Length: 310
Image 1: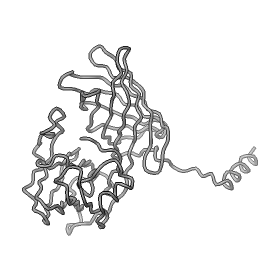
Image 2: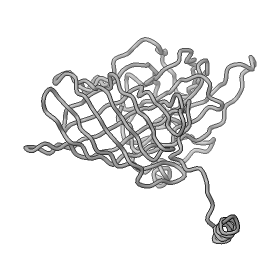
Image 3: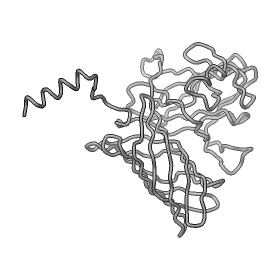
Image 4: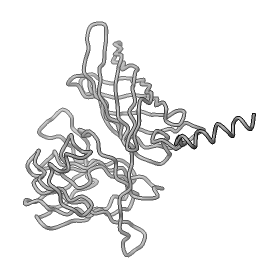
C-alpha cells in the first residue's frame, strides 16, 4: 500500500501536477470586494440585480473563515438596498461562501438575504462564484442567481516616516480627472501612462481618477495626495447617497481638506479603524475606497475589477 502511494506521488510529480494553495483559500485579517450581477425572480417578475460588497475577514475556525461586511449595496432594477447587518462565512477553504443578514432601502424598508455561493473558477488574481438564494422584502421572496467576482489583495510599496512608526502612502490625482470619463494620465508605479494604455490591461472596464482607488492600510497611515490635474481638488469622506445623482455622497466629517492646487499635495492621516469612502465633493465620480484595519503586515491595494459603483 505504501509503495502504491509512493509511486502515485512520483507519477504526479513527473506529470507536472503540483498541489498549491489557491486564491480561494481566504486568510483572516484581510479585505476583499465581492461584485457581480444576475437576476431576482418571482413567479410574476424577473428583475436585474447587482451585488457589490466590501468584506473584511476575521476569525478562522478549521477550514472556515468568518467575515464582516463593512459596506456595500444590492440592487433590484432601480432600487438600492444598503448594507445594515450582513455576515459572510467562507467554507471548506474557500470553495463556498455563505452570506446572511439584512439590507435596507429608503422606500421598501428592510430586506433579509440568504445567499450561498459555490466556487466556479479561479485565477491568480481572483475567484468567480455562482450564487443562489433569496431576498425577502416584506412577504415577497425573490430567488436570486448571481455570478460574482471576489477580488484579491496585492502588495504595494510604502515608505516609513521619520517616526519609524507610521507609514506613508502616496496617491496621485490623474490629469484630466475633473472631466468624467477622461482621466487622461494615471501615475502608476512611478510611470505616467495614457488612460487608453491602462484600459487595455486588467482595468479595461473603467477609468481611474486616482493612481490607487481601493486601498487597505493600517490605522495611523498617512496618505499624501498629489494633484497632477490642471484644476484644484478637495478630498472628503462620507457615505454614499444612492437616491441623488447630483449629490452622491453625504459627508461624515472624518476627512475634509482644503483645496489642493494643481501641482501641490496634501497629507491626510486615517487614525480610526473602519471603512472609508473618500471623494471629491466637486467631482463626485472621483473616489477612493479605503479599508483601515489593524494587524496588517503590509499595506496592500485591492486588485482592480469592475467599478464598485460606490
